[in-house]
Image 1 (cartoon, rainbow, N blue to C red):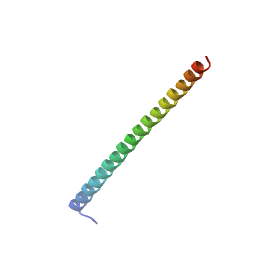
Image 2: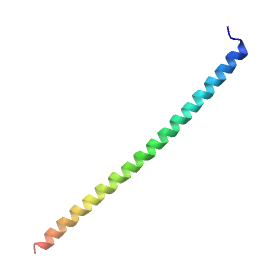
Image 3: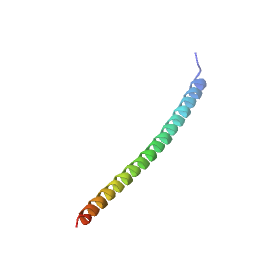
Image 4: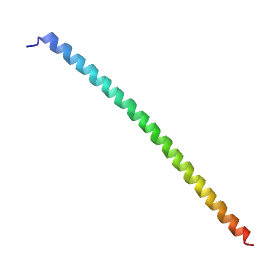
Length: 66
């Protein structure tokens, strides 16, 4: 059976490992969030460009028919 100092040492090691695991997960979540923001920005830019092109084509057709 483990002695009290050994148990304390094992608990401290487990605590350190859990703390490191949580830190790693937080870092991965931050990276994922950043990628999500970048994708959102790209989608918005593409949607804006598509809307601008569609509007330009409508204007061109309208004034081209005169």
